[in-house]
Length: 428
Image (cartoon, rainbow, N blue to C red; front, side):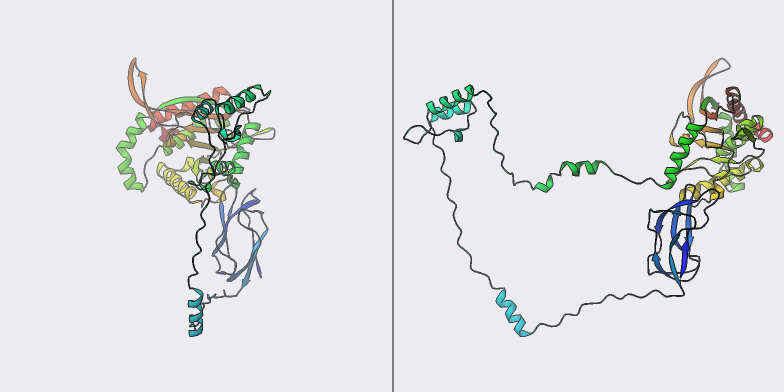
């Protein structure tokens, strides 16, 4: 037997959750064929068979948490899967004797005469007494006639009303509840059924739990502040309009806003290196390289794939890499090394319509740039009010090593570079 073992999951990742088994017990497997899928806090993993054979046992079920080195199941090497044939039931022809008996047993039984139900005797009451009873909400079934005629008369009703008023704690008469058979009881769900339909409990995925833990740790550890600015997007939009067809034809990828902001961010980080640093104990570690994380909203939760050495990449290379990483994020095929080691992060809530936000930094990084929706607004330029496509930008930063002055100037630098995109060729 060959054990199916949880493989190494990447730097600092030791746990995973089983998403699903692609193969079932008894199925044949081939070398390199995926047999089980795992989810880690960073990415999904496919565990492949290391030998040809049959999956004989599964020791860890879907949704169970496992660690590196745990045995998930066993493969019997060289074995072949059994072919299961469904047995078909062959019916023997019935003999003549059985047919005769079956006909005898299916003869109709004589109908039993219907039993007529006797009608209940109705309570007799005089018209005057009935009128008084109706006016005073008197249930005539609670009253016994006092005379020899067997009828309830006026005196009987009045005596009942007087006795009821003299009672120290008169109890309200409850109407008789009769079962309404016109609507079946299953049409009216119980209170527990109603509540169960209004709520649903779903276990958090490992990635969602990790996101929640890391964001909470960031708030508890770092001294997070945010500062804001706004950028006139006219120049970039005009440049894209003039160059997008030529750009796409030459490089095979569209010219988006992402590459402009990545280049502008690198220019600002070079001017303010403390925002491209991290805290390690009592030391500040300055990064002389620029691995820019791009936040992507994937199905399983937010992921931040990294564009490595973005300062050495052209606009086309940055656009191509971002497109590739976004596609992998949507497919859940990002690898651990594509998610590790970013020095600074950019997140764009504008694609979802956000006008303003305060993003949370991604530890151990000390800064994150938030981009937002481009919206036409009236602005004052050279003493005149004009309408321009404007975007609010936000920088959340760790105040332990980044001062407010540097944070504000960082956003101003990005504003200057975006509003004069030709300067990105020099600064970026």
